[in-house]
Length: 152
Image 1 (cartoon, helix red, strand yellow):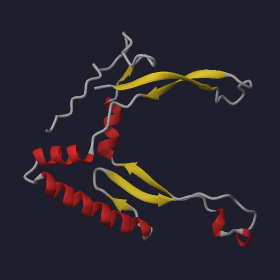
Image 2: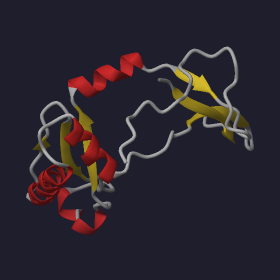
Image 3: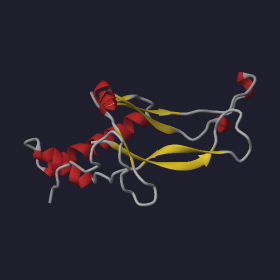
């Protein structure tokens, strides 16, 4: 399956671009959402757990993950990757001048594990028409169909 993208006209971000200059950039066209309930059902289909069991485990994961992140810990999720809280701040000339108010809003950073990073080597691209959402011919990639199992 390929990653579908469309071209969008945006401000030219080149270093020496003239004022008002624009260029076309690729923008990923997401192919839907995998709802939480469907993910639980799909995981259950590949295991001996029920969808409810999967949900209970994932809810527990979220509870302990939030607690660990708030303690400043890096949460390791095995082959999935790591999560951690990260912040930035404005700089000051001396340590004495620094105040906590200079710290910007914290973010949760995800760093994928090796197994997830490896799928990036398999990505192909399919250009779609921005107006109609249909594929343009001659691009490498799949048919753009969703090959996830449908759980009802």
